Length: 246
Image (cartoon, rainbow, N blue to C red; front, side):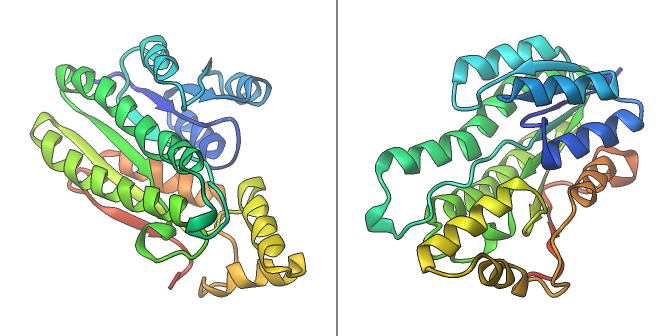
């Protein structure tokens, strides 16, 4: 029997915290994980879940996290970093590698550890967070965009590998989501282009037909749907939550 337990990386704030609340409301035991201990503990206490600290840049901490979580039926790979805002010649190999370490490698490591357990338990759901940046060329944000394209390739490949084990793997592609992360990205864009902050924010919103930020709760509700029986035949899909991004 599948355990009704979810593990969510980077779930102290934003999309991760909204997803923790949404899955807890559906009766899941939620394992909250983040590098931010105070915020993570607060979310876990709020929803009656458990908190396990994890730095996704550290492989041994990911292994410890999965072991501490125990068997799960839902894995949400939400962890990610924005990476540098600079042209390719100005980006260091360390900056490139640091972006991929959290955005891609941590996802691979978590899946590598969780898939055997889900297979033994008869199935499960894995949701990987990509981005609207995973379908565009993104000047001055090449590490981030490349990492989010990589998430899609990994998701599609894993989905085909594990489908017969009853495991579904899908990716979500949000555009700009309201919160501190997008504000830091906008601030970096404003600084790079010598723009007023308001003008930089308008630039980001202009690509979304709705001219509005995506709310974290909108992404969370989609993850709840993907974890449900209603999404039984959705596998290897890339779901945009982007307000009509182009």
